[in-house]
Amino acid sequence: MTQELPESAGAEARRHASDRRSVLRVSGLRKSFHRGLPPRRRAIEVLKGADLEIHEGELVGLVGENGSGKSTLMQIVVGLLKRDAGEVERPERLGYCPQIPMVWEKLTVAEHFHLFAEAYGLDEGTANRATDALLEELQFERYRDFRVEELSGGTKQKLNLALALMHEPELLLLDEPYAGFDWETYLHFWEMSERRRNAGMGILIVSHLLAERDRLDRIYSLIDGRTVIE
Amino acid sequence: MTGFAEVGGSFLREQIRAPLNLVLLVAIPVFFVLIFANVLGEFAAALGGDLAEQAATSISAGWSAAFLCGALAFFQLNSSREADRRLANAGLGPWRVAISRIAAALALGVIVSVVAYLTLWLRSGIEHPPHAAIAIFLFAAIYIGIGALIGVLVRDPLSGSLLIVLVFSLDVFSGPSMTSSGSFATTPTRDAADLLIAAGVGHDSPSSDWIGAAAVALAGLAVALLAFWLSARSRT
Image (cartoon, chains in turn green, orange):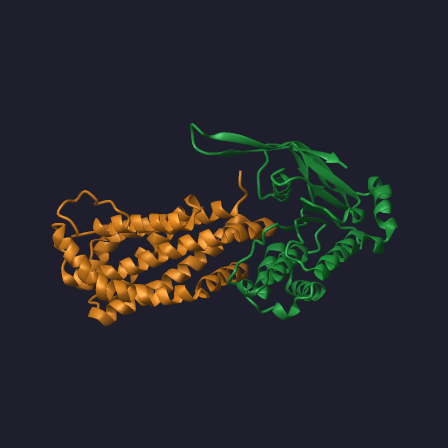
């Protein structure tokens, strides 16, 4: 599958990365979690000075073992978790697709789009156009009026991804975004990501296993709380 | 304002669409007012209290609204925590999410109170209808606070449910005329219960009871707002 890719896309992006505006700059990020009650209370140091940079028009991977702190790093960038130390420079318009869909089981797909349009501050026309386009692009138009509890795992994940995309963010953060996708949707996901990368969006994909390395402009490994460029 | 109404309306629909919630909305007031009231009177006698049948019936309507609203507020917070955080982080902000959640909880409180009120009216009639309606809603508001507070403190649904039952039981069995001792005179619903008992038999209540019950209900709603805000904001 990787042979079908335009070989030059990643290389070109790498060549010109330094000319482009940075959309995410993380430096010296530290985070510990405190677990248990005294006297068994202990601190678990997850991030020990992680650094990471993404420019506009870059598709970057972040890999690491289970529990290495990938999702923690991403949640700090998004703003869902507070950091202990370090700096995060990120744009205001950011899209986040969490690993486990954060959605309401009893609400319909259309109601989710309405709620997130409200959160993103989109006017009705823009919200409707974005909703229609994403339902078509991710091929789940017929589930528009289905409640989340009635969707399959893969369709739920499509909604999870679509909610992160509907305001055309400058920076897109995807945490294991293709869990539950069938092969066709998986391939389609990469095509979508590349289209957006080519349009100037900065994208960070977190995964414990990245099979599509050729599609990425750069890969960071998170090892012992620090990032290493592969 | 439209935004709050839209988000709050979605949160309300989310709760009403659970079929079990709709069944409980009717079953719990019916159970409390028609069955629990008699048991409550017998318990009161056993504990040395002097809760009369009419008073027990009236207060049961308040307890049904309290129990339902406490449980609904707990599960509203518990089941939507992650999605609410994502929505707040996407740009809505924790305060707007919290206010929308409170609006949904209050709307549910009104629905629950209306069902409890109608059940009471059908069962025994109400001598002072407006007072009874307000008192039942005050029960609901107080327990919205208790349910949301437990929701933000306890993540496990089973533990949270048990804690609500425990608080509720302590509150019920230390209510007015339930025991011969006054050791529990400061339980959250004490003034609201006095109001409801008086309204059931057509007596007016002293203004201190109204002020006390309203203050506790407002405090309950403030606690609920804080709990929903804590749940929707960034974590440390």
